[in-house]
Length: 521
Image (cartoon, rainbow, N blue to C red; front, side, top):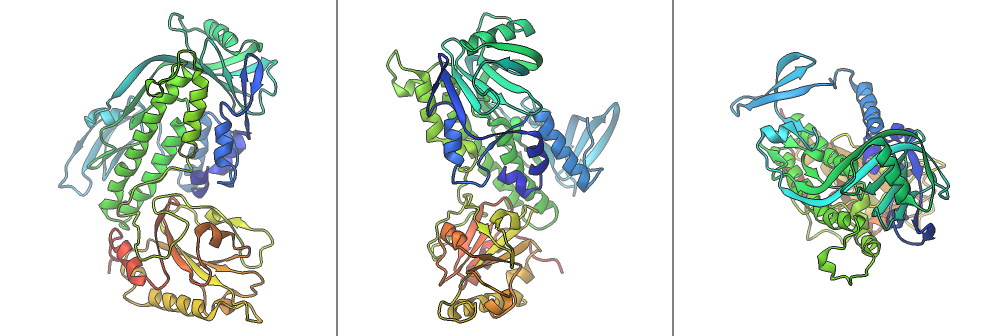
């Protein structure tokens, strides 16, 4: 949700979705504490301002995104369209020529890149001869959407799991427009149809009773896990289900696709705009493929437990309950599963600085989202609200705290001197701001309350947006000493890229010079 909000995509999705906080787990008709989906609320409480989950079906998510695209440019999306084939000429400025069928009208499109986000049976992946190795399990599941009447307690209040002795760990999730998403392990010898599906669901949720008002959609599918051998091969890129396949046990399909797209989008756009080198785009494969591999390893074991089989590595006794091992897997990997713990190794974008001040953040990781105040504001905003994802880096300047001995709100003298020196450097003709492409935005954070005018407090005009940390929440969350200050570089997708002391101008410049294109004259 944080990633969608940074792109201005969350509001419409949230209006349509069913919002849940908390969960319930039932076994033999009785509620069991601390099982099932309980790990989700445990993982998000206190770690994000979005302390809830959204239940929404894919068509409505797609409609919301299409609507936002139309707001930006009515010509940006043309659908439906079918890729027939493509060719590559690396000597051309537009190396990809794609032959596309638009409702019977076949045309050739020349492009710099071709992105395949076209599902598990990806045409792009197939045409690119990118391998899709993996393993298929013996498990078969069903997922369905329906309007339901039931005597289950609070069936549209929580995410529910039911520990069934015959149908695995049953998913019961309220979603948009009065529908419920239900998932059960499907019996091997049963032919799926509307009627058999209804009967199996009734068996799965016993002793609760269920009646179907509508059965909108269902799908029976084999459970397997796969990761593409490449996510980027020259100008050909794949993302989402085209790049990785897994079960729906942890609700990772759409969520992982969003991580792929928000990682790829700003990199691709920045390269096309001439801001960043091709090396930035190449980090997409390394970052997202390693994340997908972790997901696949985890999903293999979670899907087995959901299906009633405990993975061999646990050496479980014969009478062990698979649901006990399931919640252990969920809890041990909760931060990754809910997305807050997704992180990336060091590369040209994520660089540690051995001489930087010691802060409470890590490069390649998502930082906290503390509350900050605009000058004079009665109510605060989340830090991320000041830093939308528009493809540029956010350079966050922690200018320091107020002088406790001053009768008026002023920075400490040493902090003001450091800030003025950094500002003077940025304004100079040889600074990275004036020698590299225009890929930078700034936020200045002053620690203190009672500030009347930011420039008087700083003893100079600010840099970029000026916000106040009245309570010290941001300085504490980032681990910044308000007598020293710091500079924290956040990537467009909100990940920490680099941090340094305010006097480490050369180190900051060297970081950006590694991947930002020189400014054209």
